[in-house]
Amino acid sequence: MSLYLADGINADAVYGYLKECAANGINVRTLQVIKGNEPLIQIAMNPYDLDAPMHLYSLSKTFTSMAVGMCVDDGKLSVRDKLCDIFPDKMPQNMTDELKKMTIHDLLSMQSGHETCFLHNMRWAEDSVKAFFEQPFKYEPGTTFVYSTAATCICAAAVERVTGKKLVDFLDERLFSKLGIKKPVWRECRDGQTLGGTGLEVSNNDVAKLGIMLKNKGIYNGERIVSEEYIKTASSFHADNSCNGTPDWVVGYGYQIWLNERDGFRGDGAFGQLCVVLPKDDVVVVLLGEAGNMQTELSLVYKLVDTMFGENGDKLALAEYVDKAYITKRNENGFNRELAFEVAENPCDLNKVRLFGENLLHVELETSYGKKEFVCGNGEYLLNHVMLKNLSPTIVTLDPNVDTVERVSVFASYEILDDGKIQITLRHHNTCHVQRWIIDPDNNCFDIKVFVGYMVCTHFELGKIELDIQ
Image (cartoon, rainbow, N blue to C red; front, side, top):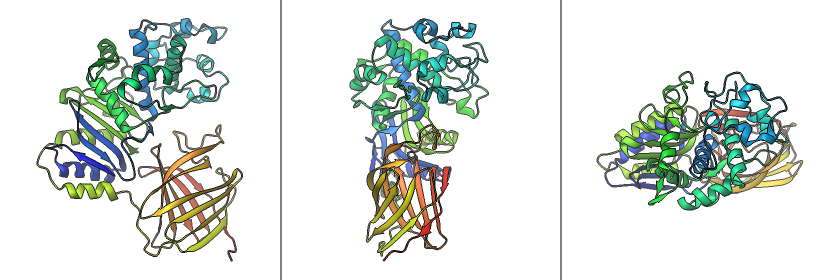
């Protein structure tokens, strides 16, 4: 748990904001509000941390845009460069007129000419870039907004082509190291192409540094990182997205940057990742969390900015909420039993599950890929690192092309519910997801639900058969 409020910030307004978020199914994990270059509000809800990397989903796109901007500043790229000239070796034998016209500008502004995002075609292809250029067109490039992470992936590929470096290595030299960001993880396609439009893992503190640089028109700590011209261009209107949905998603799109209805612009990522720049207020807001409705999330951010100044309020009540809001109910008698069961065939390849312990709950899993174990706290969270299959949620929680075992980092806690069910809560450390394992010994049921906020995005009904435990 971490809480900082500058003088003049009303603790009651901040507390009210967090409670209103929760009432709307938005679980804040980490929050910063920065005015000028100084933080006014810093919050990390227990058990999270402002310095812990998290998967940004599409907020990754804004970082990729900065890489393109640096290449433009260096004269290695122009936004009017045609993709057929950058990637002549990746073009299909019979190029369409649309493909001959497609430019970096079209991709940056989400006007590639495609009807949909083709990332699923690229992610598992032998040649992801070539797979993109093989996709059919519906529109003339540069005319119609269609949100596409695949297009951003090609922007990343263009940076890698003209620099001869991996995107993360190029940005480590030119951006991350200058902002004081440790070289991060950036996920890739099967063929090693950086995803670009998703997959970057950095912390709230890291995103805040990007936000400050954007607000300061490309300057951070007195050093020019990206040209003012590119920042201005990237945060300006380039695409009409007026048919795209709710108020903050219909006022225009720049270069991998959304324009705000209120003022300014932002980068954002699925399930509630926000870096909001409000130039008129001289404010940057960074929020990493779990949100089903991002318009509500953003509207509440605006409300916080408007109401955060005033008398100090009840800071102790706020601190208690930050510390305890996500903590599970403590079982005074501990676990003090042993329970084991087999489960039906399932995508996670769990065969047998054994629960044992006294105060802490040990969960032992027998799987087709070996025996695994994690430990759950009682009224607290314990950080675990465990290898699991298909239980590392992403934008597509159960991708049929994955079927892989991954190292999952989770904060684990358990509680005994009033009806006798055992509930295990796994809060993912580096993604905005929460798993709840519900074990009902009386009715032979074992379910795993994966949540974002209050929204269930995956549900495994595994069933169970009791084993005789001596």
